Image (cartoon, rainbow, N blue to C red; front, side, top):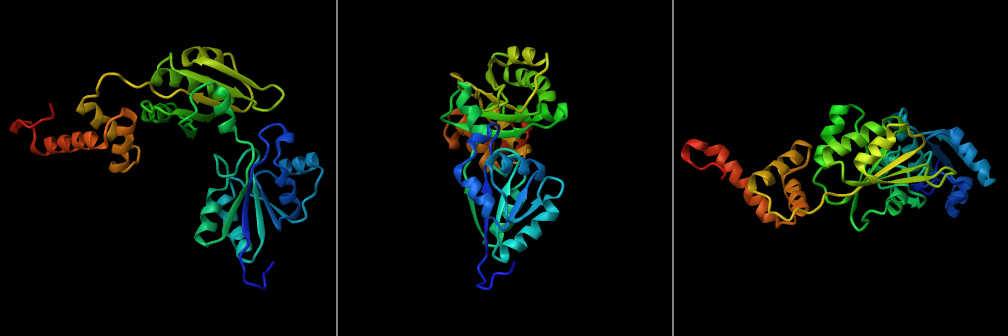
Length: 297
């Protein structure tokens, strides 16, 4: 669909209902009806959505899911370069948030193609609001690794995180995940398990992680979002060795040292200079060695 004016098209990321179809944003129907190309995570679910909305797509419908995301992206970028309006929808919620979309957005941005969005329901924000936990500062951690050892490692990386944390999890892994969280964060850490949000059997189970792990062991079904309280502020001052250890943990997880120092300082409520000085002192001590009497005290 060549554009004789030479103007590139627009990529539209559209939020879709996470449960109740009545939550569909008003603009979604119009975009579905007029887009030149509709890229859907599941074309069958897209068909059910359009039927529920009482509309028909007039553009070309293609699948865009984890298995073909890399191969399909160049094709969609080509359509955008030719002036098409490409609408991207996933099964539920906003594309790119633990769903396909990031590759296409990145490719479009690289080509200087306009990217916009139709805001819609979000399991992250809905669960956060319903959790009863602090919402002034939070972070989204997505899905944890499936393997037990990797899952524990990821949880240890955020054990000192003071912001409220939001996770996605599969129902058949929920009991293991909550047990791991109780082990790393402490069984008394407050949390909320949000199940089937906006659907008929919506449920929000709140309580300490230890109690929630016991509850989940009986089996839980449906779409799951877990909200966990952040680490409490410690009244006692952290020693230099602990500050250095926390920086090292973040560096091993892939953060740059500058970012790791800033994050540790923010979590501990300390000036960045204090953490920086502790890291430098430890580095110097490692170079000179204990024989010269300059080890970190």
